[in-house]
Length: 191
Length: 117
Image (tube, rainbow over all chains, first blue to last red):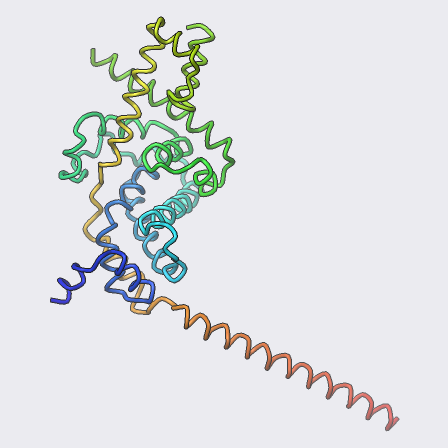
């Protein structure tokens, strides 16, 4: 009964309750947002195990920062920012000890892991482009993902990735160009 | 590929079709390679937009792992934070008073010794 009552709450109410330390409400927010946070983490770090750690850590950071969430942005937007910062921290830590992030990449598109309900709406080029994104370097891919999939501004990207706005623009340019080349190669190979 | 083609390709990658000037658009109409670039750019943008609808399913244990990690304690509320600030301010006041008293005592002792000498 308690669970049914919690699930019937609107997210805004859940956020308000979580801000005052209500663990049940925060747990419900975790259940609601876990897939989108994990998806962003996978796209940023390209490693499912690391993405799981990033997802967990991002929610823990969010819980600790809940009192500071003022509601100026949507809760999911705020959560995305925390996820990007967390992913960056994890990657930096990992790169200090291991410099071969490509090794842990799955060689095939993770279509089996895509939510079948929502993936069905975009059955065309999405898996190909997801796979092509993995061919980009981390620094370039992060900018493309945040700009073209999550609609972040150049200024937001620069701020969160600790780079200049000019660098963000250059990486976006390079990333889009590389993606076009990758997709063209696949298309030419298929013809 | 001439200079104009290179410029159009670069513009598409950095600013998209909105960045193309009238002159560039006229060139695209007459250049097969640039037309292909524009079509590929549109396909790429469409595919990236489609990705917004694709969600990866998080491992089932994520909610449990998160709730285990945050422990049973509650987040500090604004009221608690105020209380915390009050405690810190009170401790600072006590420390200042103690330091002042210690310094005063030291001065008195010094004067007492000087008189005795």
